[in-house]
Image (cartoon, rainbow, N blue to C red; front, side, top):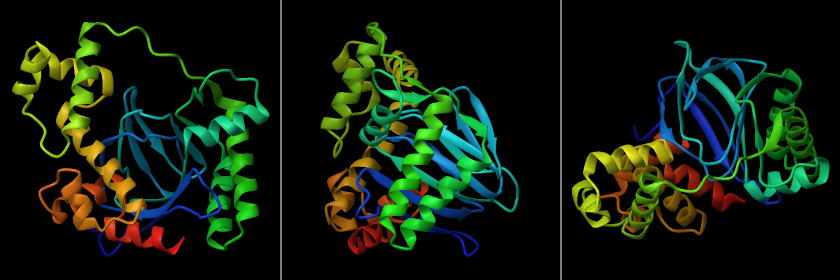
Length: 277
């Protein structure tokens, strides 16, 4: 899927005066997000319809009045839960931004995170929509203020320090090395068999270990990683066609398809919003 249908719309952007925050406001009907993860947090509030979000622990159904909280690097996918789709406003604050707020208003030690995935909290959902309204009106002071109120409220109610990663077992070490090799060879990645051979394991053992460590098989993770790197290139002003080649996609249509599915807007629209800020 390289573009949205006529019944769908989306705006994904980054307010110039709110560093560390991306915003997505959209209505999706047929669009589905494949399994992916984010470097920072995801805080979403549905205002119409129903969204089904698939997480490692199961599926949550997000409707009006609920807030969905997804911690960094947690794999998830999403799709409409009803035929008419869903409309929502989402905040993507960076780890640094949430940590900064947590340092101001909580006693949490370490990296902060959220213990709940979905809660019914209409007041905070309205704050999330308020960040969007203020940012779209160009009122950075209000947007920043409401953002901090929303995040502080969620941290106060559902916040906790994220657990540190346990010492890696042999399978997890193989997965981590495979991830590093795929990052280094993103333009021309090895086959699963060759990758496993380099790491001294079998293809199926590596695939199981990688999925256990990162919630996705290697090929799915690589597509997500390519889109992430393409986003950084687009942020820096790189043209979509150049970004496609740089991250290892065959051509721009392949970037368009995967980027739109994962980010929610086509790369051209994403880059245009960056150029406006």
